[in-house]
Amino acid sequence: MRVDLSVDLCGVRLRTPVLAASGCFGFGREMAGWVDLATLGGVVTKSVSLEPRRGRPTPRTAETPSGMLNAIGLQNPGVEAFCAGDLRFLADAGATVVASLVGRSPEEFGRLAARLAGEPAVALVEVNLSCPNVEHRGEVFATDPAAAAAAVRAVKRATATPVLAKLTADVTDLVAVARAVTDAGADGLTLINTLLGMAVDTTARRPRLAAVTGGLSGPAIRPVAVRCVWQVAQALPGVPIVGTGGIVSADDAAEFLLVGATAVAVGTGNFINPRAVVEVADGLERYLAAAGVTSPAELPALFKAER
Amino acid sequence: MTPVRELCEVLERRRVGAYHALTLLAPRIAGQARPGQFVHLLAGEDRSFPLRRPFSIHRAERPGGSGGPPGWSPGGMGGSGGPGPALGTVEVVFDVVGAGTGALSRLRPHDVVDALGPLGRPFTPPETPTGCVLVGGGYGTAPLYFLATELRLRRCRVDFVIGAASAGRLLDAMEAKRLGHSLTLTTDDGSAGRRGLVTDPLGDLLPRTGAGQVYACGPMPMLAAVSRAAAAAGVPCQVAVEEQMACGTGICFSCVLPVGPGAPTRMARSCLEGPVFDGAAIAWAELGFPELEPTA
Image 1: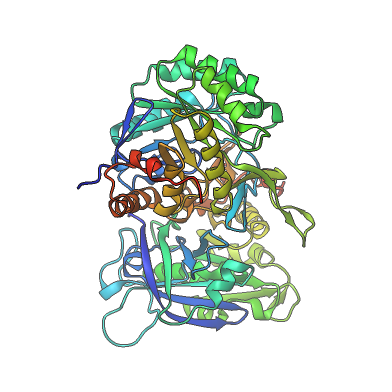
Image 2: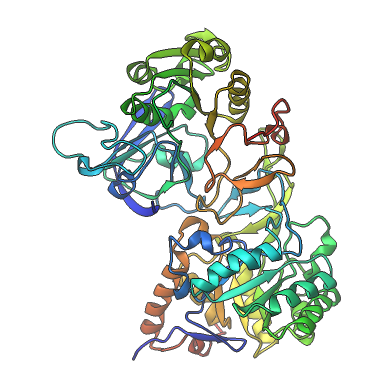
C-alpha cells in the first residue's frame, strides 16, 4: 500500500498537502538553496501589492512564549517587480505558486488579480484579507463579512485562477465571514492569519515592536487555528481549507488534516528549520502509512469527533 | 558557497571575561566560513522560546587543513591547536541576555547544537595589502580576530581599537595584542585603556597608520560613529551590523535597515545583504544618527 501525498486543492493538483505559508518563505527564491522548490506542495508568496511597500520600522519581531510577534508591514517590491523577478524564478524552479495579494480596497484587489491573471505560473491566488499590520483596522477586510466579500468579488471578476481567501480568527463569528467570502465566489479558505498581539519591554517600559502591536504566530496559536478549521469545516462542508498556524511537525499538520483541512501551510516553522516544509511532508507520509491510509484526503474520515 | 544545517557537537564552552565562548564541531560550516559571516544556533530541548540566535563567527578552523574558500587564504585560524589534522570547528562568543543565550550558556561538551551557517555576506578583503584598522565594541569584537588572521596572511597591517563599558567586558584583548601591529583599548569608565569611546582614537590613528580600510563590529551607535570618522578621514569602512533577526535566511524581513545610495532608501535584509555593509551606504540618519547621509 503506497502513500500518495498529492491532494486536489480547488482543482489544482499539489504534490503534497504541505505548502509554505505567506510571509514566512519570502518570495521563495531565498529558499532555493535549502529545499527543492519543485517538491513542495506549493509556495504561497509574501503578499504583493500594486506599488512597492517599504514596511514598518524596526524592531519588527519579538519572540514570545512558543511563538513570536511580527509587524513587518507587508514589505514587498510591488506586483510588477514580483512578476518580472520572483515569479519567473519560481516558475523556472518548477514551484507550484500561490500568489498572495494585498490591497487597500476591492478595486486594488481587482487590479492585482487582473495583472496576475495573465501569468500562467500562478496556480492559485490567495487574497490576504487579514494582515493585522496595516495602517488602519479598516484594511483588515476579514473583520467584516461585507467588506471581505466585496474584495473577493473584485478578485473573482478579474481572474479565472482559483481563489483562496485568507481569514483572521480575530472575529466574533468566523463562520459568518467564511460564508460571506465563499458566497462571493472564493474557491477555498486559508485559516488563519496571525492573531493581533502586543508585548511590553518592562525594563525600557515601552512596546517591544516599533509598530506597538503585531501578529502572533507559532505553536502558541495552533489550538486556535485547529479550532477555526474545525468550526468552518463543520459549517461549510465541501469548501477546501488550507490550515495554518503553528505547524512545526508532521503531527501538527495531521491535527489540521484530521479536522477537515485539505492542505496545510507551514509559517513560522520555516524560520526555525529552513527544511520544515519538506520534513513535515515526509513525516506525514509516515503518519498516513501508520494510519493505514494512502491519501491525506482519507484522514477526516478517521477523525472521531466525540471523545 | 551554500549554507548548511549542521548538528554540531559541543567541544568546549568556557568563560572569556564577562562572556561565554562556545566551540562547535562543525566541519561543513567551518570549511567555508569567512570572516564577518554568522551562524544561527538552536540549543536544548525546550522550545518555549522557539527562535534561533545569530552569532558572528569568532574563529573557524577548517577541517583537515584543506584549502579555504576563494578570496581568502587557506588554513584558517589555529583555534583548538594541538597535533593532527584539524577537525573543523567554529567558535562563537556571546553574552547571556535572555532565555536563548541562557540555554547556550548551560551547554556542556558532547551536547548537540543545531546550527545554520555560514550565513550572510562576509567582510571583503583589500585587493592589495594595505593598512587596516579594526574597531570592535564589547562582544562585537568577536569576528575581528578571524578577520585579523586572514588580513595578516594577506600581508596587511592590522591596528586594533577595542572598547567596552568596562575592563571585564573587553573581549580577549591579549588575542588582539598578538594578532595586531598595535592595540588601543578604551573603556567607558576608564577601568582599562583610555577612558572614552572607540571612536576617540580614530581621528589620530587613521592618518598616522595611513590606513586604507576600516572594519568595525559592535552596537549601532558605535558603527554610526566609526563610519562617520572613517568618512571624515576619507577611508572606506565596512561595518558588521547587529540587527534583531528571526530566520537568518532572508524570509522573515525582520533584520532590515535602510541603505542608499540616495533617497528613497530601501530596506535591506542584514541576513542576506549583510551583516557586513559599506558604512557609507547605510542611511544612519533614518536610524536616528543624523550626521551621516548615505553616499555610496
